[in-house]
Length: 442
Image (cartoon, rainbow, N blue to C red; front, side):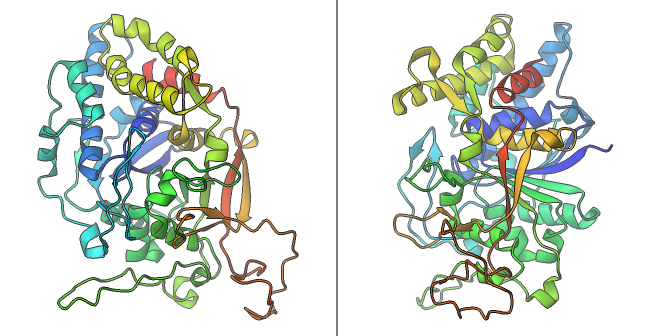
């Protein structure tokens, strides 16, 4: 069976980097990472880029260290296939920018950011990696004793925006042969879908870590970070799961009336007659399923302690950003005191699914055709995953839209609304962390 070929769209913070390390150190028979698509999110897009380049820099040092010490080099998927790295969105499609660098919510940027401001060309982008360290970049410099290089033999740099690269890969390959693992805000994915929805729908699936269904959010009482960071983008992507995408498309905010403004909005999707019958296979991994999968401080230290003593650059680097995260969890949450501190493995869970879902299909449980919609306009509910909790029967397809007075929004329609898959069970809460540590560190 050929490996699962994936695009990873990411805003590299702590668990994003763990997800990338898990993917790149996996077996090449299981996974092939073709593109790492970078978006804003946990930090600004420059910081995200530096984190990725920093990671590759440390992996190079780690492979050299393992070779010198007679250890298996690891990172087989990476050594078999060098991924392309491309940069995408700097800002959300909507009007408010939120970042979560080490769980700090930055002051919202309330300027409007339209398409022209969201995507830029990145000629010469590797030069950005030489200054303004992020926490992960600083940890890399300390671990290796040198500053991260602006390039690496382990990846290929693209000067095209990442959404162009997403569409190129989908267009050059057969339908249903590439999955998109989206573990950041969905801005890049939404831009690709808007640019050419027919090519975008060639993706086998979009595996999205985001949202909260029955649990509280982690940024507001109802919203998870990846959905609130760009709810407009999330709503547009979710709409492609619908038989009638226009039924759940978000309302367009008004354009600027300022003279000389060149603002433009993303266009609506083509009518169904042009788009065809194909719908997006979106599988959601919300906080409900990701939060219980945790990396404990004790098990991290047990795995990496001896490696750090022996000089492993990777062990030292991960310690540099994971230990402050344990401390932050201890300061924010009950039950994380002392050695009980833990990090939820939100993003690695999506990679774990991509690695094992085919071989262990009976151990994963995915619901189908859930009408999950993203709130884009609420003052207190932006980014919320809205579901219909009423115990109501669905309406027949021959009932005209709007004929049912108690169904504002067509929630009871069989032909309207979103059709999202959702992960509700995995091979086990305590399976992922040791598997991830063993895969990454050997």
